[in-house]
Amino acid sequence: MKTFHGWLRATIFFTTLAFSVTASATTGYFALGYGAKSMGMAGAVVSNPQDTISAAANPASIGLVDEGWDVGIRFFSPIREAEINTSAPPLGAAYDVSDKSRRNLFLIPSLGITKKLNEKITVGFALYGNGGLNSTYDDNIYDQTAGAFGGAPQGVGTGGATPDTGKLGVDLSQSLQAFSLAYKANDRHTVGVSLLIGVQRFSARGLGNFQCFTPTGFLSNGAGAVGTACAPGGFQAATPGFVLSPYLSGNNSDWAYGAGARIGWIGEVTPTLTLGAAFASKVYMTEFDDYRELFAEQGDLDIPANFALSATIKATPKVKVSFDFQRILYEGVNSISNPGPVPTAVGPGPGSSGLLGADNGLGFGWEDVDIYRLAVEYAHNSAWTYRAGVAYNTQPIDQSQVLFNILAPAVIQKHATVGFTYSPEKDSEWNFAYMHAFEEKVDTPVSAFGLPASIQMYQNSVDLSYSKRF
Image (cartoon, rainbow, N blue to C red; front, top):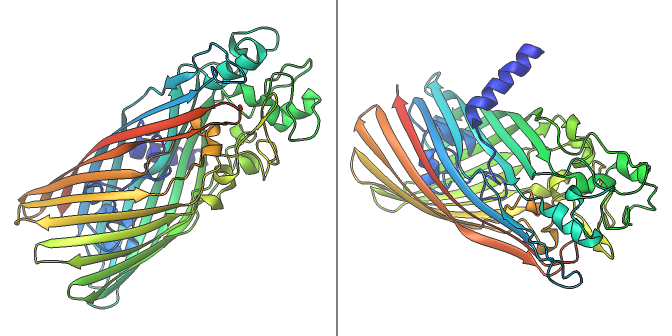
């Protein structure tokens, strides 16, 4: 078992390296695309496969690309910021509770390989960072704002201070391995299936102010029914005899493993129109035991199901136009979709939600996301191919859910990409893509603190890859 876990950890290390991508995002916490060619197309590759890594979007694609392998690296830079305005009524407190998250550069590798067994059957393997969440604040925004209720920031403070406030942030890395098989039914239709193996790593720090929302802290605090504040001063744990939960914050990285499946189809309906479709089940993951009193369902964080529909039009012999629609079912995962804290007279409270870690426990309050992608591919000649795309997704975070999403400000909605391929010889290619995700902000006049709050982010990324054909 130790050998098996060691192999899985080595795999996620290779596929993600420093990968702790902030809502990696751009589409909630899923990546916009996988590999340089896909990113140049803004991810619109479900009916227009580009390379061996396209199995990450549609397993049928490996039956339509040349045999070979692709290896790439993404340089990803998310810039994110959060603020709670304590100078507003009712507090008028003189605390500066805004901060920009540091760690603004991440490296995200990807790898794919395919091999034809015969004229109809192709097998393939792809390794890629599916997505993630990261925030690293030097100033603990929760702690400073809670301090405004009680007269001093709790982590600075006095007898009621909990020891696990400090620096604030989370780090979620999520990798998928796709073992794929494609079957070419005839010259026009190809179907495929992938076994998805998921590996994820998580850590959290600085969440001590939420101790009284945990089952351990709540029961030891002598508070009333769930939905009331745990102690004077809002959610600060300040009563005598209070017991800290060891499963909330400040632990080392915990690992989870799981499996799911993806199926797909690509069909040439006419000589100029190709359609595609893909569906990925939920990837059912083991629980984060070290954070069982943070995530709902005792530490469960499954990877959401999703599906996509696509059409590609061959406008001219050299130009293809692709349109993809995708829906990510975040609402099918309780720890992501359950609502977060609500305002009370003395600060945030659980409201009608259960305690952290319970099946109905507090979550990030995310909604399902719809993604619309439009891309153009121009094959200039045998050596040069150019790509460009745009994408828009609906907002996963309602303004009422800003407080918890300071940890995961996945507010991006609009993206633009460009890319190209240079083929110095028939069996090798160099690929490049650039993405800009435009700045987006979600703010609310009444956060769970009862105060105005906001989260915002923009992103840039550069993808480089090399392709070798057999």
